[in-house]
Image (cartoon, rainbow, N blue to C red; front, side):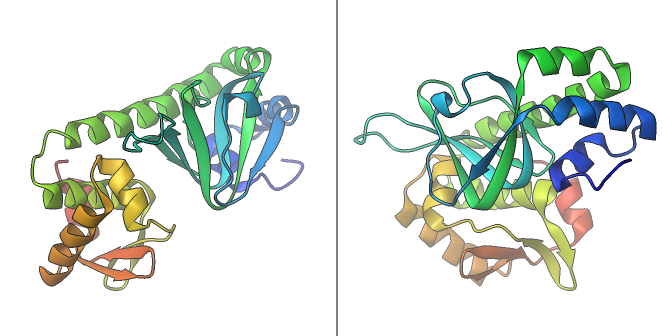
Length: 224
């Protein structure tokens, strides 16, 4: 490779033959880069020519932007290296911490899809995103909110967690408000659920970050 790939592109192209990875990186180099500052909303108009987004850095959520009287719901979430669709007209994209996304146009997407190994990687990444969404929707079937919170934390830990000495740490900040939007609940209900999970020894919380007090094997084997 001619240079160090950004973290997200490194994840996306990891394991590809060097020449193919370089060709894909050259196609992606022509794509627009959008810096996502914490709390700054980005609507569909922020990505006018994008067919796909790839998260280069940070953690991104897409939130349904219904009228203020409605409960906010996060419809998608993505870490570095993950592909996702641009926000729909009634959605808004936010970053946790300083984040950066690459907007891939239809033309560049089609060029990447002519490279079989790259196309397979893109399908795998989109399948991952779809699987995340399916798990999130299935979580709404649980009537006990403490179980919704427990399963959501397991999902985040499995997808984006880091193994530490005494559990799995979710490094990016997840406030009770954001966690509530992820599971379709109220902030007050989530606060009570997190308190219950802390008393049960399942999770420890420091600020807006969490550490699941379970083994990696438990996280990977948990049926969500």
